[in-house]
Image (cartoon, rainbow, N blue to C red; front, side):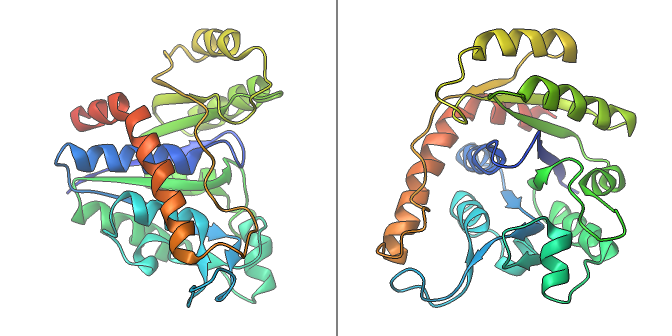
Length: 255
């Protein structure tokens, strides 16, 4: 049986995918059989959007596939994929689908059993609903009971989001083994270092990694890109992120 980690964030767009991708690539470089999952993903791109693109794609899933060098099929990596860029419960309703939590948990556990390390990326923030009945990402985390790596995007409001997320995780008895501060979310945020020190004190946990500003992936709505150039841009970001997350990846080997 391998070891799994949940990569959760304080909000959407805080760098969960970059951290997940960087860690899994760094683990591969250490000779660890590692894979990355984003079990629920929304916001797809239809075939033909990029020149040479023959199938629908999801940016985050593409980045993770690039990171672990296609260790998983798309179905294994992201069993629930929705086209609408919205909260999963809205996106599922738009397609007349319902997420099955039992299937989701089994799919994640299956990959953990097949690899030495599996990084499982969440979707959005911790309380994002996965189903219209209110079942959310925290409920899934509580079922999985995996150690958590928390990503805090350093921007206005992040202290509040960070404290609430940590309290919410702890209320479910979930262990946060590391937290990452992402400076790349807002280049104009002036209190990054002070925020890190403050959260370290409140979390009672030293910041494991400060992610610098990385070159953004070539994902912008830009159909003039060829699909190959699009993927080449993703590879550049994955490579940079793997260097930035190397020290944390070394720690994950010891867990």
